[in-house]
Image (cartoon, rainbow, N blue to C red):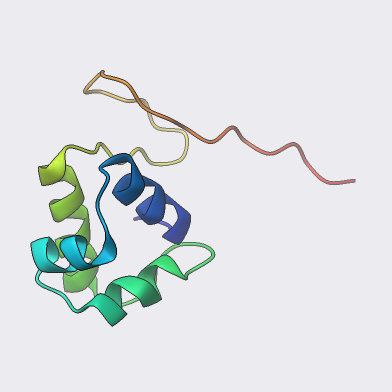
Length: 86
């Protein structure tokens, strides 16, 4: 659904701190910190993840899944696929 680095990047693009995201999502700051510390997909209560995604999208970020096309247009940043390690 969303990765820790993707969550941090989205928040940073918005110029938003963790406290503001927590408030918008109706969650605690430690919950946001735990989510952002995830290396891969954020694990946790589905309701909490849904609230974070909704808050980021409401604030103006389009979260793009791996291999998915951006449908909303606008400016953005996307990580390139890493080459396979030998």
